[in-house]
Structures are given as structure tokens and as C-alpha cells.
Length: 390
Image (cartoon, rainbow, N blue to C red; front, side, top):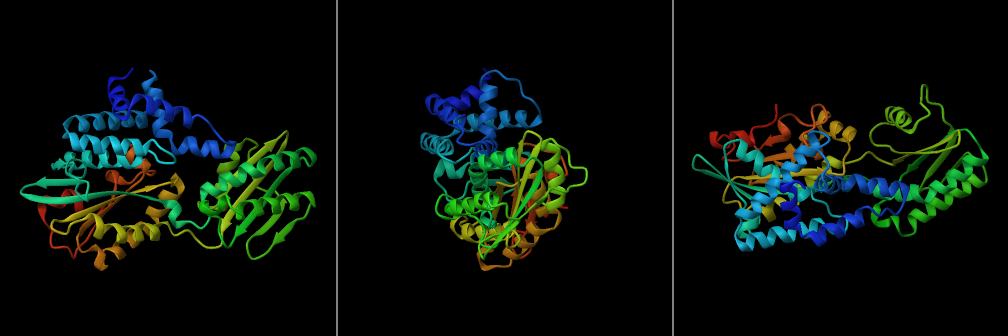
């Protein structure tokens, strides 16, 4: 067993860790199960390494280092700080939570040390509202590490989508057995489909409409809640295997579409869904920054908001960066009164956390946006952590 990962598991508690791994390996449905495995990939990969597996690539080596750093941080904390860290780990291993918030904190501290800052874990050690206290050349700065879900900016939630697919998939299997061929069901959902409503009346009603449409062999069904259209699948060069087909569909429908493929025998049934309006992920991040800055930064020192964008995929993350959506909303936030204590905002995702290469990850491991109106914005001591990304 890897000693560093063993120390991390000991910190979490061996019984709690074992119970969590058993829970994560239980799946409730094909689509939901795959989504859950992806969401909790950090924990599952660490457990594979714990059981003697060799790192399969740079991402797992980075993950091992994060676990080792967490154990080292724990060893240096006072008893009250160690108790807070254990509480964070316990929360991370419960329900739908993940290790992302904790590892975002650990990685942010490591980045700041690499830039020449002394780093104190003030949130853990002293119960400060911010997480890290940076010191360099006589200057101090506060860092608040926050995680925001991209789901907050979507009308059509991925969690609700995979639960819908688990419901619909048996009906599609039956349809394909009776109607061999290649089909595309396009759904436009003007009112969206949210996770909190997915287990109520909305999701079962949408499932019932799809089932009735297939049973009656109708080509279309529409009202104010949903527009459904069934057509032959006509994608030039689309491959029969799901991976190749998904790649072709993504190019066809764009990064905002929710896609699923059901295959049976020689038949293929594709579902492609969109909300009635474009996603507003960057807007949701701005709103979160406006909410947390006054609560988590004291205003007595320059403050840095280190934002982690969770529940995003490669295509969406690149879109947010390349279309300057994150930059636009971050700079808008920095003009608001809530941003007075903020000298800079940084944004990262799992791609930066696990060391992905460009273009999947942002250069320098994060996006940075400096607040030119802050009195400390031009301090040389803070420059490595506040200068805007090139």
C-alpha cells in the first residue's frame, strides 16, 4: 500500500473510507451510475492506488500528491485545526459531496508556495472566514477557496438528464427491437429540467410523453413545456460504435446539448436535448462571487477569490475560456461594491487540478483577473498571484 495514501485514508478514517467506497461502487442505473463514477473519480482512483495499483498517468500522480499534501498539512495543524480538517473530510465522503473542495484548497496553497508566498491555513487552524493567509515581503493577503457548480447556470441539469435516460432506456431498447434502424429524438425544453424537480412530477411526465410518442409512432409532440421531434438519424460519417457516434453528435449539436445513445442489435437511438435558452454558467459564477466575497474576506487585507468550477466537461470549459465568458463576468463583478475587498479572482476546474495540458486546461494552472481599482493591485509582492492571465 502507498504510504502517503495510507496516511490520507487514516486521516479520513478507515471504516468511513471503506463504507464510502462500497457505496460508490453501487450503481442505481446505467446512465446515473456512469455519471456518479465520473463525479467521484478522485475517490475511486485514490482507492485503486491504495490497493496497490500503479498510477496510470499524470492525473493519478497529481492525485497522489494531493493526498500526500493533505496528510502533511494535517500533521502540522493544532488539535482544533486537525479536528476541522477531519470534519471537512467526513463531509467530503458523505452523500453527493466529493473531495474537490478540499483538494482545491490544498492545490491553491501549493500554487502560492511555488510563487514564493508563506502560506498559513488560517481557516483550519484559527477558524478564520477565509482559507489561506499569504505572506511575502511584508505584505499579507487572504484567499477564500470556493467551489461553484456549472449546474447553477443551466436550465437543463445533467443530473436530471441522466435520471431521465435511466427511465427511458428500457423503452428505447424495446422500440429498437421492434423497429430496427437509426433514430434521433430531439427535445427542446423551454422550461428546462432541474435536478431538484427531477424526482417530482416533471421528469415522470416527460418520460410518459416520450413513451406515448413511441407507442403511437408519432413524429412530433409539443406544448409549452417540451418540443419533441423524431427523425431518422442522418449524420454523415457517423460511426456505429457509441464513442465515435458521440463525437460526431457533439460536433453537430454543440457543447450545450445533452446527448445519450442507446444501441440494441443493429439499431441506434439517439436523444439530444437543449434548454430553451443558452447556459449562463459564467453568470452563475459571478453571482456566487458577489455572495461570498463580503462573507469570507475581512477587508483588512487584499483578498483573492479562488473559484473552482465543478460539473463542467472539456468542451464547456474551453468554451467559457475561449469565448471570454469567464473573463467578462469576472471583470463585471470587480466593478461592483461587493468586490471592494477583492484584489483578484482566479478560476480553475478539474482539468487544472489534475494537471491536464493545454488546450484542455488554462495556462499557468488557473485564470486570473486583477481588480485594477484595489489599492494593492500594483504591489510587486502580490504580482505573482494577482496579475491577470496573459
